Length: 362
Length: 277
Image 1 (cartoon, rainbow over the protein chains, first blue to last red):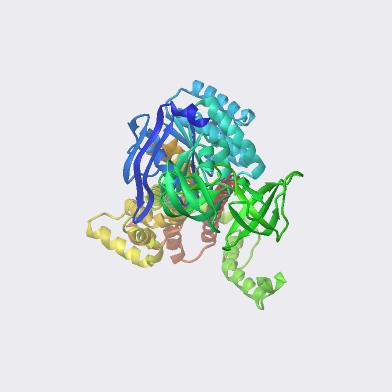
Image 2: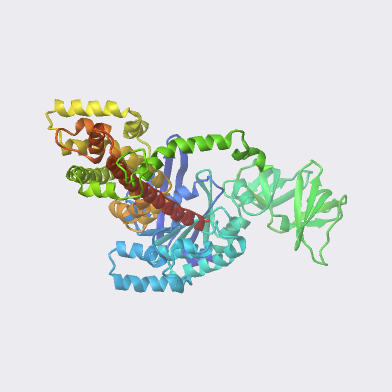
């Protein structure tokens, strides 16, 4: 849904062939992204992948080694942070400890030259927006982590930035709070219409909140797409493995035609499945999500093996099946009365749901 | 179990402690107590009296002491203000300019006066002033005091600044503050406890200094320590004990203040960082 809704929109932030080096270390390598107006865009990747560096180059805290950052068409790559109409919510919030909530949120407005009266009115408005109406005269040290996080959000939203940058703002909160704040944050983005660039290493956070996600690893953009694109049509092994759980199965690609691949599976079975753009013939990997593998009679499926282990997960059951070549395939089945769960030691056949398997770029 | 490691159970602990405390504080206590002695003797107790304090303020030597005290305070305040400003700038450069060539060397240079024997600095200053044809007087004392006060002001300021995450400055810049506004509105208030602490320390170091002052003061100018030394040369009278006790009281007050300010700063910093967890 995000894709169609957003695809018509103007580009808010256009990152063009951005490279960032620290001495010999390349933190970002030829990154190009277009983030659209009014989009909730997430940079997702493991720690150290360069996602925070990318955010900091947009904020202006890091200079770029090569490339351009266009904000609604204007190159901002060489502007200092105070000249960029973007605001940041920091991971550790960075609330000024010697100022109360009101002064913290006022800070940006006053620096922009707003008169005190209208600035105060605006502060009242954003504090209501983050449900902190009664806290204007508290010091940051007197607030809980969740409240501080809201103040940081209010402070960054108050000057009505063209783009809001959020650097893992939920990582310091406990799990329950984090889940509640996710929804609020998404709602806030819809209400304000401000473009959000959100950095996280938490794939669940990324999947639930974002219009689009850029998966980043080792300083490179691996894939950009909606949550569904990335989960269901990962482009390469890294994305398939990083987002959710998957079975990566080594196959021989016998033929490629019209975006479909015919693969020889371990054990001699064959399957035809969609191939990611750029996948090549020869040796390769397919990805199959555990919930999309089913059981069949031994020899009736595309592969067969023996049940090695059952892992009880509450709503679901993980069934580890060892194939003849020693590889393990995980099957995820619902723990409902209707579903068949084979006992350990049983010989089973495995089937893939229609479109479940996907040939990846290695 | 923790007892085995407790310092207090080490053999000789209490004896050592008592000996140290005695050597450190017995002379001071004796001076303070005998400053209230009604007798002219400095060893025999003749009853409680404030006569030597009255003597300090209104006695024969009072004008000399008063002039010296005024000089001392003018010099100490000026030297403390100037060295605190320099130390603040130095700390900002050392801790907020990233890595630069000669950083370690600069740090050593700032703190060198702590290491150089005072008598060497005193002689060198005197030679320097006379070489450039500077008339010794209150100005030479002031310049010399500013120089040796810098490291004393620098240490608490730098220590405080080290504890301030530069994230606050980034946040300020992100919220459209210029570099100067960031310094004035964010860094300076957060550093304030360190700066005050550094100022108080510099003040007391300047107020107490004798050796360097004595070399560079020139004829006719006295500070309190040199005036006291001048009087002692003519024999120790109980009024010296009174004035020494007064100086001691001022020192204690300032050092305590410096410590208190430092502690308040630390608490503020703790709540600021703990809150973020």
